[in-house]
Amino acid sequence: MTPGPALRRRLPRDAAVMSGLIFGAYIFVVSAPRVGSLAFDAVAYWRMDLSAPYSGTYGQLGFFPYSPAIALLISPLTWLPWQAFIALWYAVLIAAVLWLGRSRFVTLLAFPPVAIELYHANIHLLLAVAIVVGFRYPAAWAFLLLTKVTPGVGLLWFAARKEWSKLGVALGATTLAVGGTFVLFPAQWIDWITLLGSLSGQTVGQTELPVPLWVRLPPAIALVWWGARTDRYWTVPAAATLSLPVLWPGGFAVLAACWLLPGPDVGYDLRHALDRMLNRVSARFHRPAGI
Image 1 (cartoon, one colour):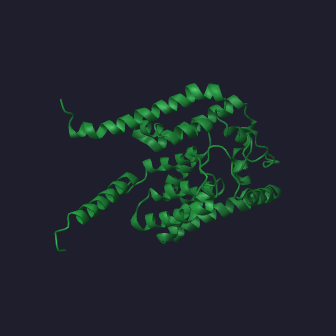
Image 2: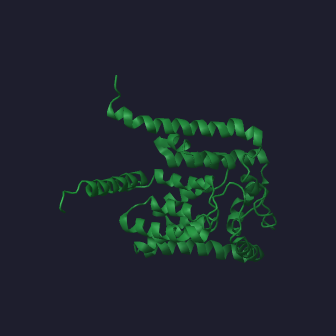
Image 3: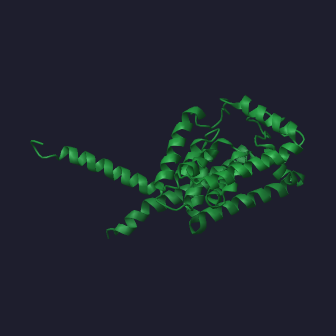
């Protein structure tokens, strides 16, 4: 029996989901016990010492890279035993997946960068949550600006749409967080700003994609500006991902924000772009003689 059109459309999707779930199971069940690097990034959050948060070595276990405002936010969690801390951290990350994926959370779990992100326990899924929330409550953008910093390029969405009040809220919330914590921890803020300057152009040298930020930033700006002018919400997490300080596989988990955003999705735009290209090629080769 020949499969119907609906089944033929579902087969590639279902195969991709199954492959993604198998990949996720592999890295947790097989790779994690052998490599021993599960929750590698979360160690930095648990070990963070608020009195000297930037004493670690870049790219090494325990290096904390985020602003003093974020350090203050997570400092109460550092009092917990490791087992309690990581259980709570993973509960937050799984909650982010469930919230972003909703009824399609299994499909989201099958997205390989999400599995990699869960393996290393970084904050990219939380950035995705902040982006989604930030469309309605722009103050959430402070989280991106006070952690990875450069994904804040997504704020150009508000500038391109002339939504100045939302842009002002986002920048105002960030300024308030900076000012309030600078009064308490001026030395830490100076250390963090110095650290950001010293890390410019450095590489981790592991699984990152070797494309410098200065190369990625202009297309990220153009992408989010175009998206803002055409109501393509997916361009914001895409631009935020493209402008991450270090672009590595787990960072693409920021794209999980696309699962919840309205408007045409990237699949729709790619299909239509491909259709337009094929139509132009077809018209070129089937042009009537003498024209």
